[in-house]
Length: 329
Ligand SMILES: *Cc1c(COP(=O)(O)O)cnc(C)c1O
Image (cartoon, rainbow, N blue to C red; front, top):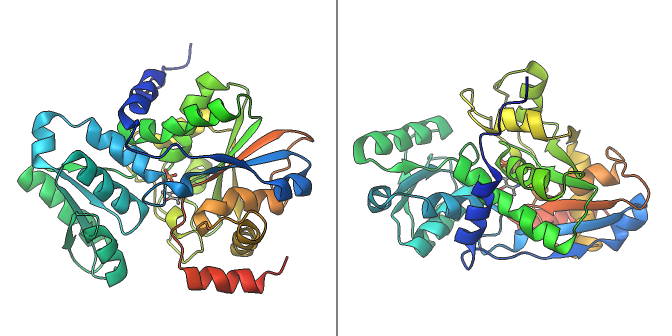
């Protein structure tokens, strides 16, 4: 039996690329001579940390909002996120003139709330935890007809993240190995969908932290499973993939070659390496690819063209400075 067609066609990525033109930053691909020397490969960094919101999630959010029907656009959108997704939705909504409500729990620190209201979105503080915030969002969908914007499990979001593949191939036509931070899987699925057409020989490897890696645990179980959320330097990789996951679980199984896990110490060492050697400010979730290379958990063949995707730069700078001081390398 031939394999079932992919649920998101390559054409969806091409549409997203055209929609996003002028709305998101075309990010650079820069060499990392230090990682090259450590690995014997040619290592490149794709700097999504340079998006105006500090993370790639702007791509998926912008594509989702640009795809709204006229009626949906008049009603507005709602999302649940304290971090990069919330900022992405807020920024995209302002650019496209759409009302956005971001639901947050009472636990979210005032600084993060302000970062979202500064971008022009409405904030609704709802309840004592993430689950209460999600329930509030679903009430807004039911009562006011707002469109819920998922951070990863949505074809428009996945296609938006997939626009990274076009830029990557324009700068490096034949990558051998692409290392992508992995949480819910929107980022890696988008990139893998693009590379399946643009660079079919490239291996795509997901990297998560070993504390609460939901996709890794779900792959092992053969179905989406919940994980216990634990504090980690890679906080943007926390959270589940949704027990009712519709797209990313299946796509990761079909398109991703491997998933590797890195420890907190490995992430800390990679943050320090990124700052000291590559002169990049990145968040913990963004340096898991470099962490896997530095720890020897991924060993590219000699001379291979390797790309590490840096997803974002949302890190407390005092904490980063501490980590950099602790790791003299
Ligand atoms: C959301 C996020 C990820 C993970 O993306 P998924 O699509 O959920 O796999 C990785 N890095 C950063 C910085 C993020 O904000």
